[in-house]
Image (tube, rainbow, N blue to C red; front, side, top):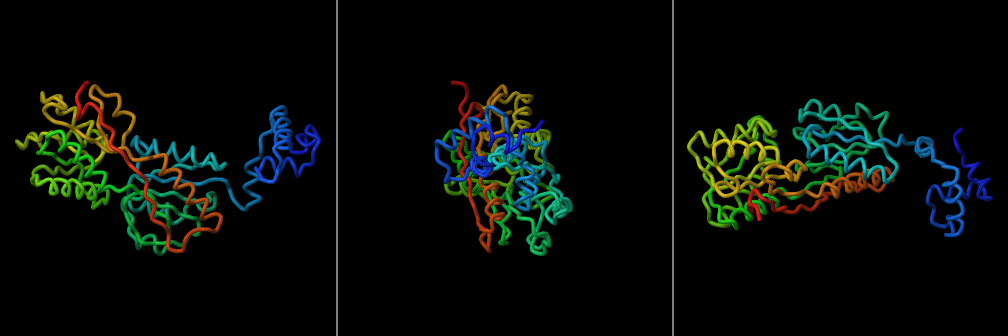
Length: 337
């Protein structure tokens, strides 16, 4: 039989209202009273009915997170961080992936699940500002990623140009001067890939190091196979880099496999830096140096932005919020110590 507020109140010898105040963490409850009620809650095993609580506020208690690909470890890890951040506020997260396709991103952004969610966190790749400008759905929306829309939605990103420059600066500091960039998509003008390319170019230019086009290798996707194909294409063309900066860790891991197969040693012959700091990069035969976005901060900012909107405190013009990143140095540039 489900334990009720009334049961807790009777055990603690207080009113139902007092129990409700403790459960809802109202600040005016005295520490002694809070401890008394909490003891009764623990003894009876009371669990709040979160569904009823949300419904009383006109909410479902569910937010949605839509990312390009849940099979990509970065987005899977980000989703886990969002779930944890939402749980701290007693919200459940509904996950979806758009495959980075404009039609699916449009469908999600226009509220195809609006009746069951309180808010949406969306990481788009292909949506244009015009797609969102005419958005009829009034469900709060928070955007992730590097596309800047100039619209009244909070937008959370890292500084991709600065992150790329940090990666290239590290390689230059290791004495590398022929640094290839793997990751421009052939089927997309995807902004993060081009921002990272801009950072690659800017840092090489600042150091007075040439950045020939032959060192820029396009890819058809952002998985391990794409990285392997790009690395093989570069080597088969007779181009020999002494370092690789990859758009993400998966591309870097694929590239390192081909380098190994061709008898090139990482990092002695070719140093490699990835991007995303996925768990897989820590456990390869050669651990991967990478740019690590603060996924926990991104998740918390996204959830906090949705809650801000739900409480009616959203800025009319939307906010541009930036999460930090850091360079994690490992064996793919440092070698084994």
